[in-house]
Length: 343
Ligand code: SF4
Ligand code: SF4
Image (cartoon, rainbow, N blue to C red):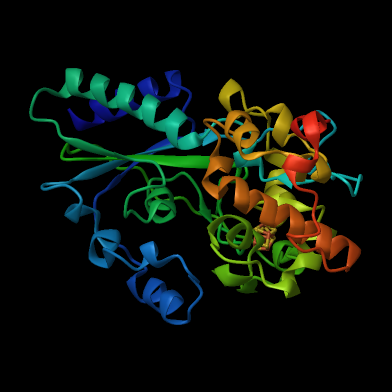
């Protein structure tokens, strides 16, 4: 019976650390026009991969022949210190990494667990079961399928918000040919709140539910390949030196302030190097040390040069003095001190 198997899959997923878990049908996106308009306005910036395979992105049935259902899982990554939500960095010499990037790479953590889940499903469902696993990598509009599967609703900051848990969770999916029992879509809303819009330091939430990624610090410090435009340096600095990603529009959200609880997943706890490091220590770090410290971390995506670029942008924004790559201390000139990170 689809109901029995669906309930058993959710139960198994929870034992693997996923929560919440939901199921939806594999159906075409309801946001085709909005998505196309967002791209046409240029809001995706240099994220050209979002424009590729558009039809597959808009219809999960193109990802797997006979796709019928999508199992959607979430993992909480809220990993602040005990001081409380937001834990603002008051020391202007230190930087902030986005919470999802403070521990191990969620792609690795969640993909490995989803493989275990899928193997288990196959033992229950039989040899005809087929599935494809996605963790923020394939052409799948994962927030939309998560909303349909009941995990949360869209906030004005474009994040998926779960009324009982907030928005600090990462998503993964299994698209499968199994006919499973779908959940009800999540319902909820922001009401008159607009804290995230007002708090965004770059005005990237151009209207409720619409993000101009080109202005977003997450895009500027992670996705953008070239130099960060100077007009954003001060925002990166004054927002607490957001040197890899940004959580401000989540930090101010009342659902996070009231409902977020620390993750129980050890892999998502902050490493020493991502726990409010000194900017000068990061700048002094050589490439080999960067590789060691950020092995298995989402930060490696920025590469050593990208992280240096971000730190320089924060320093420039703070001092409002031009700090060029040439005038910055180079690791080769730092000796052993350059390999230490104080916290
Ligand atoms: S992540 Fe930061 S910069 Fe981007 S929209 Fe949210 S508050 Fe604005
Ligand atoms: S801060 Fe307010 S407006 Fe923004 S997502 Fe949260 S509830 Fe919605």
